[in-house]
Amino acid sequence: MVIRKSAGDNHFDLGDSCRVTRPKLSDFASIKYRNEEEIFSSHADPERCYREIVLPDKLELAMRYCENVSFKADLRIVLDTIKCIFCPQITQIYPVKSQ
Image (tube, rainbow, N blue to C red; front, side, top):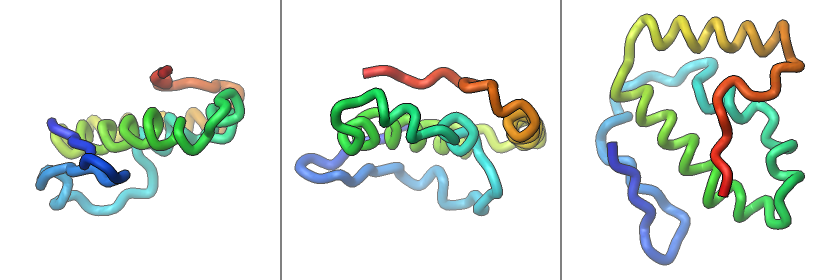
């Protein structure tokens, strides 16, 4: 898995890995960052936080899913989504990277 940031702009090169997957209702990044506003509120520059921490992590999670598409991964996403709906007090299912 290679995620390269283009020099001088905010574009990421994901390669060809994720072109064959279909859009989903939920994914690991949606679950992990469902409370993005709480993450951003603790940073002085929320846009920089998104650009340098959150977005690369979301892309990495998407690439990891694309490389390991399976019924087990889909089932985990469904179960984790249900867990978040019925237990919203759980703040972190997957750890958030810090800068």
